[in-house]
Image (cartoon, rainbow, N blue to C red; front, side, top):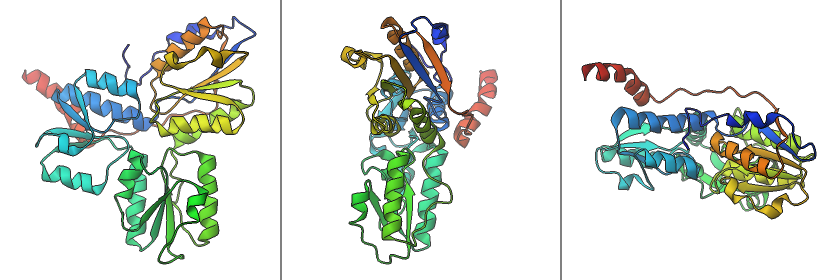
Length: 341
């Protein structure tokens, strides 16, 4: 199976006609790929087509094992560090962003960088630099070990502290409590982040935040969709990989509302006991999960009697991001190269 340009294939549409009235599958929309993920995957694909393999990618381009494995099969080489990239070769930064230290190191080694950082992550980096230059202590809300947080932390490491719970806020110490600002990882739970921000405001009444929230539109939309159907669902299935932060948050949102929920890499992870006495399943996908995996899950669930599929669009989602200049130039040069050959 292969992804198309948007990671989608709508072969499941034939299942939409109600068949089993007793069992129901609620297919949530929006789901799956966000604009930043589409952009990042396109960057790798186009780079492979324009320049040929090998193309090195620092970290997983997006946090989804299926996507990474398919791109690896096309010639992408995924590495944990820019140190693993031979001098002078091309390297793509993942959608999660990198620290200035990584950029400087890549430059010293003459690496030809193509930056696939999501523009919404870049926004947080810019905010971190701005607050640090203005003399603020920075509180970064997020998960210490997530690639995005590691990159953002690198923008102002001497003045930034990372917190992941309201309890951790109580332990914070800063030079000047009146000069504190907060930023957030883009893929967090809206509810949990709200509680942490409330704790920060209680501890630092004059704290400043970003002009617009850092949690990305796709993360918010998918969480809102889950909340819409949680009360009428016996089970929520989220297609996404274990290291996908936004996918894990969808599971947490449902469980916090009392709905049984599980994260699955594919339909093969579904355990038969999960379906016992279940009448209504809600199905969604994290922002880095391709639609083809959703389709496979729909077809599998149809064999278990869940062939009454109802797609519920909670809100429209039509965001698109432009490609990096290196890729735009490669696309522009392609016809000339072809004619020259």
